[in-house]
Length: 567
Image 1 (cartoon, helix red, strand yellow):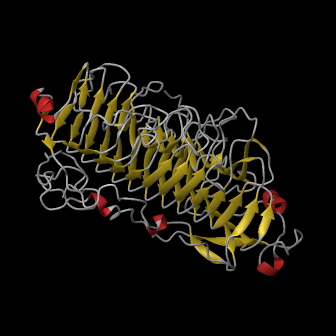
Image 2 (cartoon, helix red, strand yellow; image 1 turned 90 degrees about the horizontal axis):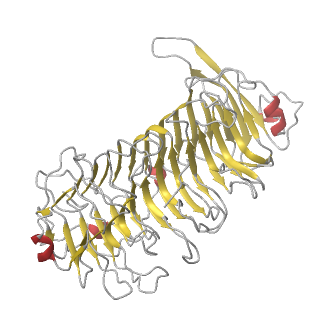
């Protein structure tokens, strides 16, 4: 099915002191700011706005002191590519960072002019404490990346790397390149020169990462690519990521965590991704691969889809824990209107990394898999998980008319494939709502489970099912056409049938929120809160280690409701 590879601006116009030590009274390191303006001169000192430098070439050729700041004039445009490494930034650390920012009014724009498979508008190579803030980076034509964070010179981790409050757009793998390198921000623990140096404490916060239009060829927003899992302690938060059409054969996602160990991806909005893709293996909204201890929470992911219509390929899923992902959680996310599944567990072993244990809980999916590109609102493929998979407290709803889709049939709520097998001990599917109102080729809704290979071993308990003229429950070679027949199998305890009485089913829509606020998308969508009289109220079963709160932030009682509105 797939081949995976992989806040405020700095105070401007001032000199200051930056604390280099801790509260024990160690010395302070002076911050020296160097200004760059189109009206400046490279023969100037650069030490004040009226003594500003002029060119990016001057910046690249200068050796900066510890705690240095390069400030480009806001509202102005500069041409070139910036490269920072141990030669021009020989002394920098997380406690005395080296900063690139704007001064004056507005953001400075850097239009790139460098070319090559591994080119970038801004490169930081083995520069601990590197910070890019309040800048606008634009691809001038054939530059692969907007920002490249890497460590090609040392076996010791480069620490304290930040990209914040910036607008980065239009970067993609150059036309004709055989490389997969390219995107708005590249976070590389895998080096192209043979030294795969580690990175630690990487923060990507409050940026706009995008293309010019839905069908632009712009590549991923954040593309992490590790060697093993040597990119540690990563935070991707508050970003708006959109209009990344990608190339036809793309793999990866708008936000791709590859080779990360210890990461939080939260409060991001991701939309209009993968418009040009016609292959399998991409694109996704948010994806992990060969990563450990990743938490994906409180994101809104929608319109990961081909444009103008589906022609070929698969994926376009909202959130995917892909091959080799371990000890990770997907929680409190809202996925909707994606051409593929809202949530995907791609359970393959990658190298020596066996997928799982992983958890998906208290997420809401509305009208996902509209193209039937994956076959289910939640997909577990390509095989039975060898470590525990937990799926509980999620709400799935679809009322899409899929009868005229290029791919026949209607999406199932849960789809398992493509082999038989036994799920690992401890696997569970509990307290989920499947409200199926979609319509397929023959007028029926999608099946509640599509498990044609008869995978077994998971505990099924207290899920609520509802739909009219449903396709039933397909389990191994048998389809159970009604709820009584499903109950009679004894495969599930505590199952419930009935209209969950959502506040406004199908009306979740797109949320209006600011990722940079540090909250949201909750309380949106209110459409999937439960009304009085719902058969889901108090009908769930307790799940240990459930995180304590539901999608809406309400404390989960000992006897929870079924679905994402558990409290």
